Length: 339
Ligand code: PMP
Image 1 (cartoon, rainbow, N blue to C red):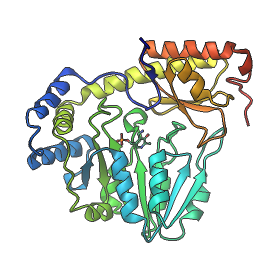
Image 2: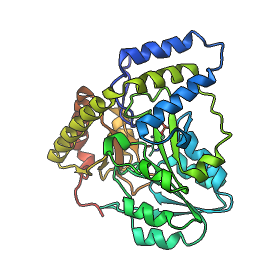
Image 3: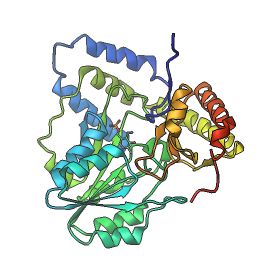
Image 4: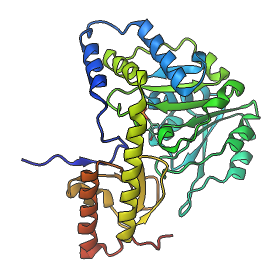
């Protein structure tokens, strides 16, 4: 029988949530013929507000932050230009392509992948919706500072969405700014650091302009997800344990890869960006039983994004790196001298 491939391609956290959360999700199953109780959704909102440290009226929960981002782009892109960075979280890029009358992206280029703030400021001189993932997927880098958010939001014609899907890993947030910045929204998710990717719970921390546009938004969340999420938020202390384990493993992985001569990038998330110098690197890893994300459509050929797995999974990945490295065809793998 074929062994299942190791999944390091979806930026999931490899550790399951505590048993009490799985038990709560099971409780949701007991009422599967019923829609979730609206009071339970209210409870989730309250708990998320407490977790994010903002008043409840600023919180909009939804079935994954992906969907919420898509919805915001749908609603706000009609009379505005959409401005993003490239590369960026792909479904958001696709939503902008689908809905926006006009969309522009600012290129993040290797080797630093920094955001050119002055170019950003120049590009938002007309009514715009700015959507920036910070930390960025796939570079893993924090892209934006508080000062830049402040500058962007001074223009009332500009709506700013900061995607903080990896906030728990980076510990950088602008959530506290939404109360005074009606044109700012932050998106977050419980799918990553909370170990709840299968539950698909995301939320917006919304400034007034966003909150009022979404006031009639009534997400019907699945029973199991709602039970799991409220139980998780009742005691989120495990999240920091997850984050510490992931960061410890991430740093070990980066060190080992560096030892192999790989061109790796520091990360503020639970994944790492690696330059392999190898076309179709994703396929080579897949053939050896490890799924990684091949970034050929977003970056020059040879870049892959790899989630931080368990220690055992990462060791398998490192072993496959060495196998590929030995392959005489791939002398360029992990070349440090790419453009
Ligand atoms: N933003 C970024 C930057 C992401 O990487 C992801 C998931 N990979 C999302 C948003 C979507 O998260 P969710 O699972 O909540 O839809």
